[in-house]
Amino acid sequence: MSENKTKGQLLMEMIESQYFPYPIAVFTRDGVLNRANQRFLDETNRSVKDVVEGKINMHDRLTTD
Image (cartoon, rainbow, N blue to C red; front, side, top):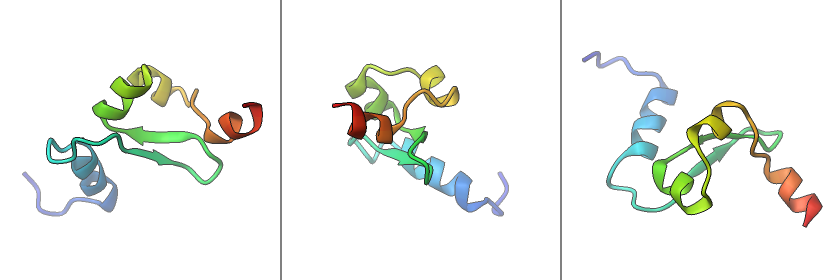
């Protein structure tokens, strides 16, 4: 395994780590969910597909509730 990992790769390893039993989500500046760990997906009843397709936006949630 290469020791020259990008910051993004290191962040993903940390987020997906079994040592973080808490829901973790990373959003882009415009509010779209960019990355999430399995715990977050389980707790919110979302799928990886929702994340990949950019269907989750926290700004929508703030303005529609």
